[in-house]
Amino acid sequence: MGLFKKTLQEFFNGEEFQKLLASGRERQQREEALREEAPWFGRTGLSDEDERELPRYLRREYGEDIFSDPHALKAAELYYLGQAALADGSVGHYWQVPGSEVSYAAVYCYADGSLHYSCWAEPPPQLLPTGEGGD
Image (cartoon, rainbow, N blue to C red; front, side, top):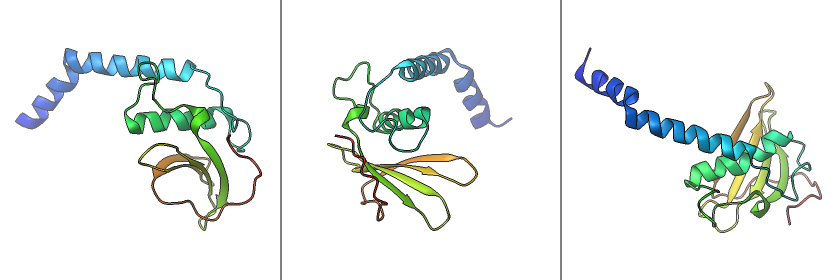
C-alpha cells in the first residue's frame, strides 16, 4: 500500500474526521426536520421534499448554517420565477436568490425521475408563464 493511500485511510478512520462526519450528519438531520415556510411551497409542481431541499442545498453551497447564522438564506427569501422545458426533454424550475453573489437557483427534473440542484449567475432561459411568485 502506498504511503499516500495509507495516510488517507488513517485520516478517514481517525477520530477527528469521524467527529466532523457525525457533526455534519446531525446538522443535516436538524435541517431536514426544520419546517420553513415560503409562499412558493406547493406551487412549483415539485414534491414538498424536493422544494424544501433547494434552500438546504443553497445553504450548503454558501457554507451557511441556519441554526447559528441569523443571516443564513431562508426559503421565504427565494423568489420562484417559473419553469422552462429544455431541449433534452427535461424541465427546469428557476428561482431568484436575493443578496448573494449567485443570482439564480434551479432544480432540473429529468425524464428518468432524477433531479439536479444548481446555482449560477446567469439569467434563466425564457420561462413558461406560471403566475406564481414567491413574495
